[in-house]
Image (cartoon, rainbow, N blue to C red; front, side, top):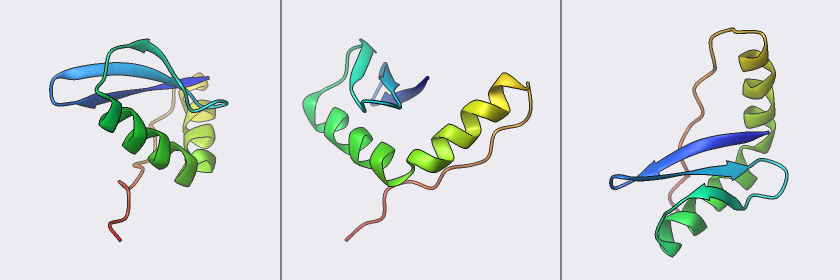
Length: 67
């Protein structure tokens, strides 16, 4: 189970289970931000994965909250 993320023209795939970059190339700052987002929205990512497997429309996932 993975998701795609893009940052300033670069992209990668992240494992939902581990939060690690598994393919592609992104700057360290982007990897950190995306991993934080993944941890905050793990439940929604898993729900979207199930929807994708059923060829259904994915739900929008909100970005990271600014502190």
